Structure formats: C-alpha cells, structure tokens
Length: 387
Image (cartoon, rainbow, N blue to C red):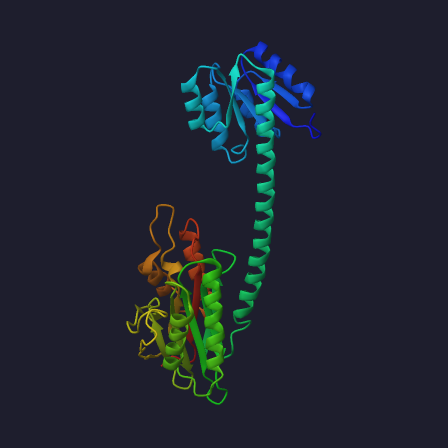
C-alpha cells in the first residue's frame, strides 16, 4: 500500500474499462480520476496535478496519440509519465506510441498485476523526475544569486559620477542584455595639474560571466595605469592587449577604444583597437567617422597600436558605442545600422551629452523588438563659446 497518495488520470471512452481500472487502482491508495475523451484529459491536467496518465489509443475525436503529442508539447505537462492502453498484439500502436512520447504500455484485456506493476514503475519515474526538478531548481536559484552578486560588483565598476572636465560635457551608460555585461566603459579623472581625463569603451566577445570577468580585468588594468602621471594611450592599449592575449582562454578577445581629453587644447587623443568607429558631429549636424586604429585586443600579444587625435570645436559632439547599438534588430530582422545612428546624431547638435545619449537609447529601444546584446555609450560634447 502506498503512503503518499498519487493522482492517476484514466482516459478511456469505454465506461467498463474505466471502471475496471478504478477498481484495481483505488484500493491501492491511488486517487483515480476517470475521463472519457482526449479533450477532457487536457482540460484536467491544465488545472490539476497528475502523476500518471493512463491513455487509451482508440477514442472518438482526439485519439490517444494526439493527446500524447499535446501533453509532450506543453512545458507544463511534458514530463507526466504516460501509460498507453493497447491490445496485446498491436505492435504498430506501441511503435507509434513511443514516437508520440509514451513511456510504457498496458495490454488489453487487463491483467491486475501488470496494471499495478506498471503503475508503480511510472510512480517511481515521477519521484525521480521530481527530485531532478527540485535539484535543478535549487541549482538555478543558487546561480541566480551568484549572478545577482556579480551584477552588483560589476555595476560598482562603472563611474559613480563623471569627473568635471573644464570645457567638456561627458555622459556614459551601459545597458546589459543579461545579468552581467561583456561591455565596459570608464571615465577617469587624470592628472590634476593639466586637468586631463581618460575615457574607455570596450566590448568583450561572447556574453555572460566569462565576458564580464574579462571586462572587469580590463577595468582593473586600465585604472592601475591611469594612476601614472605619464599615462599614454598607446602604452595602455598595448599593455591591455598583452594581458588579454596571454591570460584569456580560447578565442576570447575584446574591442576597445581608449582616449584622453586635453581640455586646454580641446584635443581628444585616442587609440582604437578594432572597436566601432567613433562618430563626430559638428555644430552644423554633419557626421564624420574618423577611420584609424589597429586590431582587436587578444589576438597578437605583440601588436602595435597607432594613436589618432581629434581637435573638437565648441559645440561638437563625439559619440562612442558598442555594436549592440547598430546590430539591434526590429521585428523583421533589420539592423538599426550606422546610417540610422548618424541620422539620430545629426539631430542632437544642440543637446547636452546626457540628453543626446538618452535620445540615442530611446531611438534604439523604439526600433528594436528585443535587445539581445549589451549596449554601451559614451557621449562627449565640447562646451564653450563657438568661434
């Protein structure tokens, strides 16, 4: 006799068969529900917990094979064990039943001992399934807690506040598609003597925890170099490239752009390591994309990176972004693209850096059906009186 009552659903259009199975199962302590059709079966499992379904093959309307397929197609019922009721000689029914997802078979005419043995077997299957589900749920919950902790750690890496840089208005933002992001941006106050500032944006290949770990390593390595009063964007980039190439597993790599603002000159000196081309918007709304730079970080530890320099005029805007912006797709699979980004930027020449950045975010999110990649931005505007 079982000690924990299990719920058996018997599905058969023949009243005599239903009553016979109930007479065999109920005295053994099972809760037995009898229904006469496939539609009733699906309605019942939608609102009740069922441990085993006993399912006749030949029924009017929806036959047993169709019911089995429907049960397996529904995530809520796909793991319920199915005992299909067949005639002893119906080999083809058994083959079709296996293909439809049935777990075992009961032969007609019924043998009491066979019915009970196969039912107990299915109940054991249910117990193993429930244990596995519970273990998996616990593992998922633990993983979610770890990812949430990792997310909080990563958020702490982003600048709390943008340092005040004379003559420049700066905004940065990250939007992650998962709990943790493979994108990274930073804005670091430089040497107080000259008022310089260091900024960086990066995109690590892949998603999730591995990409986030490398992004965190880039953050730590860049900050350690930014403390040097002789900081140089070329040296910093080449150091980070060796770090990624020598210490990252497999084919992981990163694109990155590291720059330095020189406020007295209105200059932006930067190195681009395979990253998206920056967009420079002049005060008339014209957008240019300076083409300059080297390969991605992590492929060749000895790669050399040339520096480029832009002199920004008052009123001009520089936009840096990761490819999650231009790769964002609408419901028809069309990408947001560089041209659409340039069109948005051209309309933002009179906005603050924060207003411009938020306008880009709204444009991408309005266009994209679902964000599947991280998106990160840095917007830099040169302030001051126009010449």
